[in-house]
Image 1 (cartoon, helix red, strand yellow):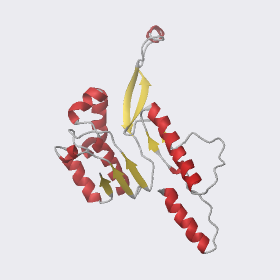
Image 2 (image 1 turned 180 degrees about the vertical axis):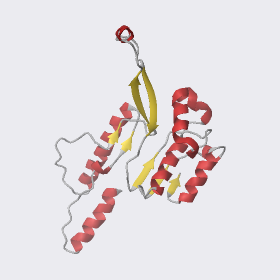
Image 3 (image 1 turned 135 degrees about the horizontal axis):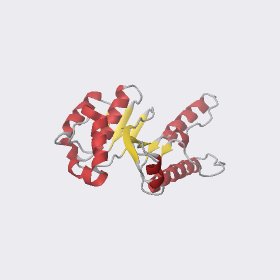
Length: 206
């Protein structure tokens, strides 16, 4: 869509006799993907789409190498940032544990999303009752602690994406957002999150 919009600008500029070099590219995209395979696949997919569009619209493809690592794509959790620090131990304890299980402590902070013009996504839907079984007790507890009263405790997982998008728009770091959702988010604690989204006015749920 960005390429289509830019093409309109290029055509209009040519009618006015103004030079306009194409600037839209995959480097403008930002993404979070926690699954390593999907993370790699996403980078390849958007680059193939970019190359195909340019080929089909008469623009040369002379990029070497053809595929690149995209710095804007992160193989990370989109909601929380894990941190580690080691327990204080005596020298003998450290030596005894040197080749054993990890003894570090983990805690989390909220993941900061980059500033953008438009945010789109397909958040994972996971009901409140299933979250602990899928994500683990410690993760769910940290998730609720980190987001505090911004997200009611019994909300579905996808609501955290909606709240993040709402906050970005409120802070002026994003203009609009479009997110996929399920009918299930209209009930229970999720309704409070939807109420705040409607007040924002620039988030579209499908």
